[in-house]
Image (cartoon, rainbow, N blue to C red):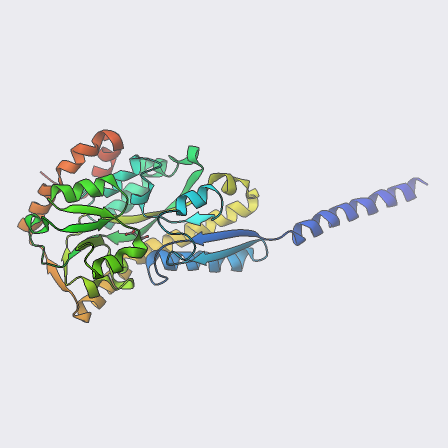
Amino acid sequence: MFKSIFAMAACALVLTSAGAYAAQTQSPPILIKFAHVVADNTPKGQGALLFKRLVEERLGGKVKVEVYANSSLYGDANELQALRNNDVQLLAPSLAKFEKYTKQLQVFDLPFLFDDLNAVNRFQKRAKGRQLLRVMEDQDIVGLAYWHNGMKQLSANKALLMPGDAAGLRFRIQPSSVLEAQFKQLHATAQVLPFAEVFDALKNTKVQGAENPWSNIYSKQLHTVQPFITETNHGVLDYMLVSNSRFWYAIPHRIRSELEGIIDEVTYEVNRQAEAANQADRLRIAASGKSRLITLDEQQRAAWRQAMQPVWQQFEQEIGADVIKAAQTVNRKQRD
Ligand code: SIN
């Protein structure tokens, strides 16, 4: 009797676990839609595709990733709201595009704050940079990583050698008050436009200039409608990989840990290759003969830096003096 009760209980247990297992294996995979606004052949485009490949290799059946490039699902105007509504689960907007949710990330837009991408990298890895990944959690946006694109160059329909040369021109900007103020310092005007509209706006001279890293210029063929590009390296265009915090923390712990491991790997690859990708695109642009590349000498570069410097003071309070100070310490070169 006792034996048969035990056998029945054991059988029930197996069935229950098997049922749970079956339910688990039959449950549909977690769907992650990853939307972005650039082309596949850019650091971010490549990062998104690598993320998809690694997730499907390692978590196939449990997690499915769909990548939507070139603003094909959401564009600049609505992607962050779509993330907050959980209509899309991963984005990597440029750091300039978070102003509505936090002022602190505007530190990345301050002109001539970072000497180069290595300095940006050091800031992102240090405590203050890490803290900034979390500053939008109260608005359901969690930062998972920083991804590099590169330093920005100024392009225009005329040669820009000195800051005064930009006066009177209209430049396309991302939605950032810092970038608006930067062009105001040059006696130019700024117009916010979604990335998807930049090529047409330059082509039909709705705007006469723009600021972009080489990879964005080349992948969108902006050099074919901008006869001059000045190698200013005056600011950085990097990304924050973000998810909806409610979605992200609801993913079962084991799966989320695996996803975080994959994100670390992809981040390492994106950031390792971004500078080389930008330099390769710079060479392609130079070889195209469509745009003249202008290199600044030390004196000219100092004049641009000086012209834009007042922007730092203007935004110090909003961004936080502590954040700016932490960013300044990452440059290796000594400045006066
Ligand atoms: C991007 O690289 O995601 C686009 C940045 C821009 O809007 O200029």
